[in-house]
Image (cartoon, rainbow, N blue to C red; front, top):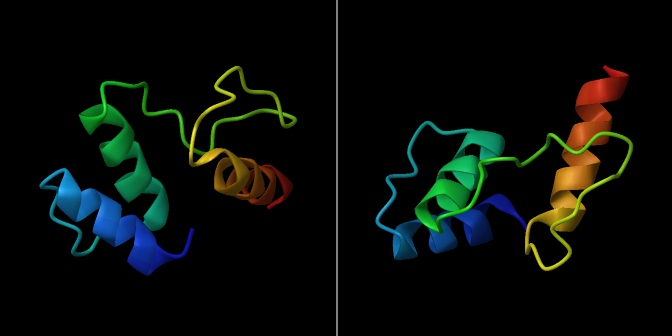
Length: 68
């Protein structure tokens, strides 16, 4: 999901989106949904949340963080 799409989801939850990174914004959305704020913490592409809408972005971000 691109940043504009993430912002739209956040606004639906009443989250102010200014000055938040994509990672922090998605974690805030996850908390608002009643879930763990686990975005970008998947290690080696392992995650038990198969239905998560952030899953693909999560793996990509976690891999970039690990490799940097």
